[in-house]
Length: 344
Image (tube, rainbow, N blue to C red; front, side):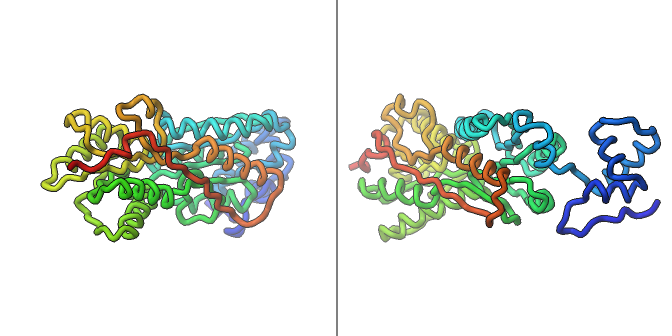
């Protein structure tokens, strides 16, 4: 079998490339792909085989112009459908794209890079007008270079892409974490535990840096024994109990996300401890209903989603400027749990 004559690496294959590969005209290729005219069975098979060999995908924006914006879709990949934070992010995206007559489709990567890549391929095959991604831990996004070069708007949310230059929208993670830990230090705490998510996550790394920044600014040592990991509420609860069981346990805790904060709350309840201060990153539902109400470094997930969608829409409208990084501010909300003084 002869080799496919691939276009240069920096360009996407065109209808003409597929036609040359299959030995037919570009118009015939269009008929096969769009089902808008009679084509012999063998010819159709040759065209589809050429499409597969070349990795051809139709020009997404040109297609949307033909079918009308109201029929176009935007794909969003998030790590977990059940996480309230990502639900709010999706809501922000949906509100922005709906105003333009676009339909949002959402899928969960389940925090795995392989699942994320498979979802992206599915969305691309559905000819989405734009692609928004919250990257899973350990991903590699070089596989999207061709799509970006072809003009597909690709925007990353909450975490930047890996090995790809692209638009991204993130929270002020390091600054927010620094402010939350400094808040505990200002209340007299000197041993502060950090309950974080998976070490490979950008958000966890940035928030740990903020934690260390606040300690250094106060002249306090960084102790690895006070840093623990728990992905999800139950794992975070177990991690928190390990911290509380240390010979010199922390008098305060900083939880690196909403699920870690919920796990810490559960652990403190199980241990019967009401004397440990707690500040969480994110603002989980019912935070004000806890006893004491939860002090948080609040993000703006809907704002993150909306800003990412607006970036994608600007690209769809023809903006060809350099990739942009948007940082959405956080704010400290003091409610009671972070204001508890150290024992004694």
